[in-house]
Image (cartoon, rainbow, N blue to C red):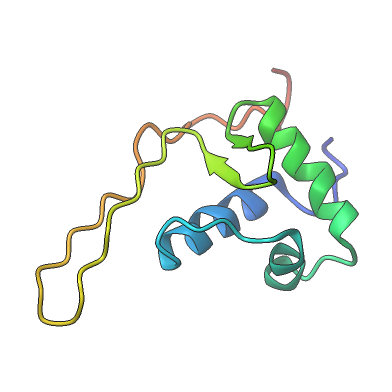
Length: 100
């Protein structure tokens, strides 16, 4: 996996950032292709599957990507107090680099 063109950390960060910016909604594989600059959805899917195997994310039956430990909050309308609880218990180690 060390030779993967698209780094797991980059894709993981893109998923988390997208979800944060879109109220917890999951990015599509095409959106991830555009964000990362990948050549195909299959290239992204390969790394997303690795992230799932390592427990960083889960994939629902409908394809929704869930970040392990995620907790998304409602973002109130303009003028109301903003409270965003974006993430909890984000894995600190990178199991995709080196031995696991």
